[in-house]
Length: 157
Image 1 (cartoon, rainbow, N blue to C red):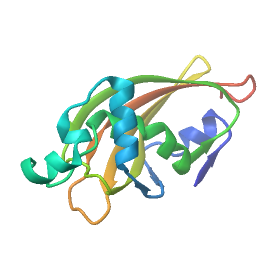
Image 2 (cartoon, rainbow, N blue to C red; image 1 turned 180 degrees about the horizontal axis):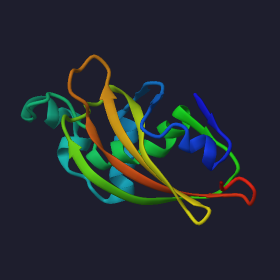
Image 3 (cartoon, rainbow, N blue to C red; image 1 turned 180 degrees about the vertical axis):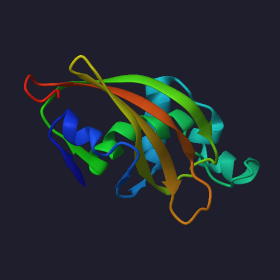
């Protein structure tokens, strides 16, 4: 895990891969709860019996946005960014879903810092993220995610 205490330490990783998270198994319970939270109850996600007979995948699949929603949790396993008083999701660019995540698949996040800017004491970080699926050649998704870090005074430069 990368330890970052301030903007200057964060900036030192510009252009570098920061690492990978641990693998996390995607369960049917997670998928069902996500369906309830988002009101997206499409059978391909929540009906294992029907998916077994009618789906090309022969099982249920995770919602694409469920996998995206795991980024903050998995990102915290890659980098410990300290002295931050507030973190804001800023944007997503060039997002591509490459392969569905099947129930029971294990996923992990690989992260590279592709750009960081100091905007008058506020750090705007652009991360190239890839969600890998264990034992599968293609990732679940890849894209560029932007976060805004408000460091505590004295740590912003």
